[in-house]
Image (tube, rainbow over all chains, first blue to last red; front, top):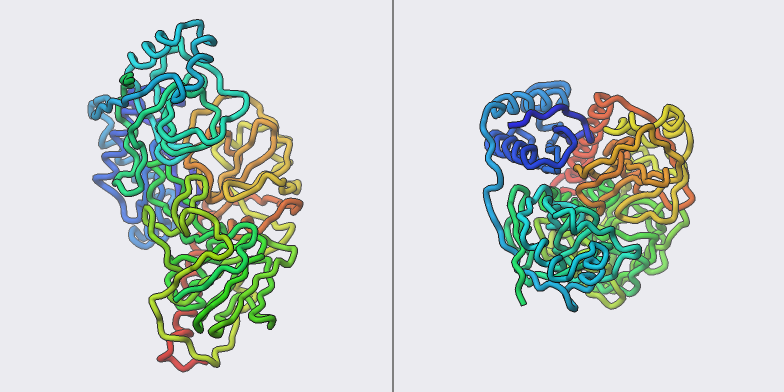
Length: 227
Length: 324
């Protein structure tokens, strides 16, 4: 795996392991590796692991760490524990995405009101935008922004389009959009500035499911045009 | 048992300690902004810390109780009236059948908490009762309370001793102020800012701006970056202070997203989030820097103090002990 470079304190009960600050599938796979190692070998008081593009944040309960491991400073203890576990997985080979998910999308029309603008901005026909968008394989790097929102990497540069100047109110759940060099799907209805090019009928976030989000960090995704 | 909402106030929502184990799903933590006030209001009526309370913003709440009940009001910024008689905050209060409770905003502070013996009953969503307004989940039908809503509470715990008459000592309360000093540790991007900006951050007062809400507090500042490195999104948490492109600060609070991409200049220590959560636009806040070791010690002291206080209150309320 690619070794992390640094560990810093986010708060009294969160430490962050960071890699080189770039968006790279190999770094994402290394984060997944460490996440798995810590999930299998948690320390007493470890509460939650939150992966991002090039970091893994570890939330913990300082009181439990102090009591369990008889230490006067849980930050130092947890940091040492994290580096020990990084060492354990250091030499392991990482594999890329383990799960592949196809997302059916109705492009254009009322479902994708900004498709004409994106086509015009990129100097392509609407059919070409759909073609490029549905041909790529995307990777889920992290969930954030709103519940279940997946940050996807892998958008073809040809399709990069700036956000709308004024966010659109009440964009329906399932809307597929482009913002700069990113593409993503709104899991819940929200006001947002992304250029909406289509919509999926799939439910991407359901509080009754476990986990509630359909897409998870590490998944690979393709969009399949439907009519 | 039920209580009817006569007036709901500007923003009254059901809250608890939040849904902390779904950050990796992009789910905001939410929960009571003033966690201490929430926890202690529950203890004052013999409830668990995890049970739901009502978070009342700027007072204005009026409830009608059909049956005799025990409640506690904590937080900062309201005067309490029960049927036109003044009552105190931070103590168990008996409210008679057919009585009316009113929370009147005093002009200082922001959020109060109403706990009821037995707990407000709302469905659990992702392990929490807290209301998350942007997605319309949790709490009371995923929304703020409105007039004519009917709140249920219980299970029916035994009533407390009717002659019970004590309040929490003022020394046990957070140091609520309009110009507080809030303790912070340096953030991961502290070094991104000029020495002048670093000095200004910790030596000047910062005014609370109107665009403040459950997601965060906007504070006036003119922070300048040394470098213009673009950051890629990483985890943030309640208390994270980000610098916005215009140089102002935002102190992220309970409803903030789980990840962010603005530089993090500092982090408010958790024990001081209660004081932070009671600020209103026009108030001034000053930051003082702690080392990470000091911050952890303060955190531990705060947790131990709060737990001890909860235990003491539970003991005092136990009808089998004779401490009234």
